[in-house]
Length: 79
Image (cartoon, rainbow, N blue to C red; front, side):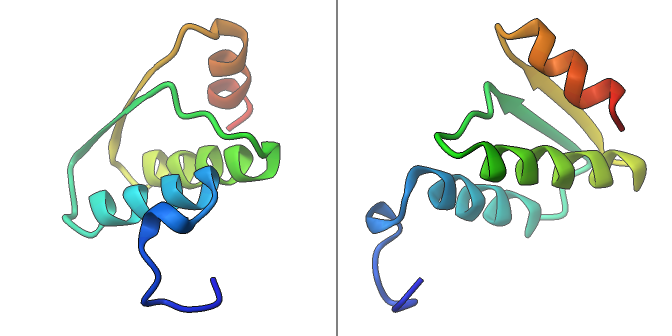
């Protein structure tokens, strides 16, 4: 991000998702519900799944809603 004063809507979709996820995590939730966490960038999507996996290992409950069952299985079993 070139200027932290720029509105979030000027960021790419993947970076917008990261900002939203960061805001949610800043509230220290016990449960995180993600509804179809997708990104145009597979690397961003992979990072989001890596973050949620580490949160789950740390004890946070993660509810993942998706219509892509193979994707969900890959990211949950791979942990």
